[in-house]
Length: 131
Image (cartoon, rainbow, N blue to C red; front, side):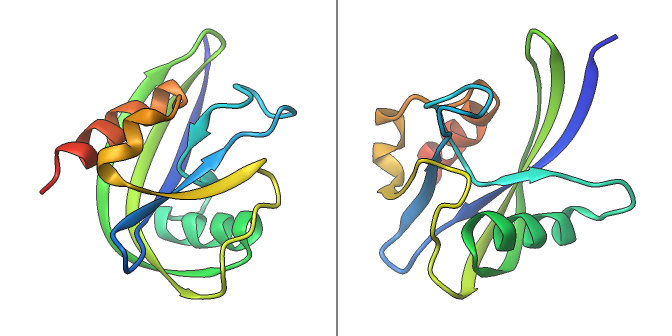
């Protein structure tokens, strides 16, 4: 049986209606693919606490949760991921990559120009179809 991971991802939008996208580093699984920043939910942790912790660790900033956005289960070759995307905004700090190769802000209509990690694609599609 494949290992199952519960992962939270932050859909962070700025005042210019741009969304923060993170490039996975060459050292990470699925290298050089784009994703929404976030990470694994630890045992005993709720989704929102996990996301706040991950964004603080990965980007060095504080966020405020807005709403649950998308819940997707994706099966990779060696594991299954339950990726829960949550809309939020930065309330303190400026995002800086610590684990990722690069961070960029993109307008939602341009999100399809990136090569996304497969588990993130449904949330990208939903964002692009939002008004």
